[in-house]
Image (cartoon, one colour):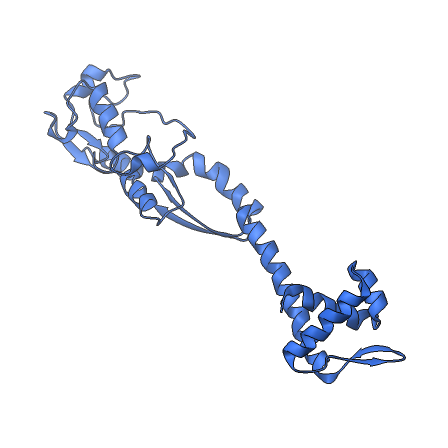
Length: 243
């Protein structure tokens, strides 16, 4: 049994005449008669009564046609659903993101995405760049927003696109000697205790900062000392406390 057999039976029930049903289907009458007869043989039941007044479904035919309508509707829905999923209109999107992405980038796109794709289930999770890279490689995320291109084993299997740029600023507590100065030089920063994201969590930032200050890649070993905190709000909060 194929889907065309269901369509043939439904067309015959609608038009109650082999000739008219064949015309509506765009086929010749003899093949239609043969296909309906073959369907009845397969089912082991007569689906239609052939009378001088027309062709009418039997009790078995009515039962079969009710299911046939639902089956064809489900097949049509399956095609539609597959197309919508392929276009990203349904399904689930698992997104990992660094906290600072909520300061500017995500607010500009999340609201519009939710409005445009109301049937897409969003799975949102804040995590460091290293963790989101690992989650992508493990198939636990579909998309990640982090700092810098992915690094480490397996990173060559990922595709990265620059979607924005951050500005590095120095934040100090109100009692710090640098407070109130319009600018701070890199030389002044070199001897300071720093609060920065862990190198293993945000390797791009750590490497860039180490190069900026003219130090080795192992930032935590710097002479001024380091406190590690990868969330931007935590870093600012610790600085305000005099750390």
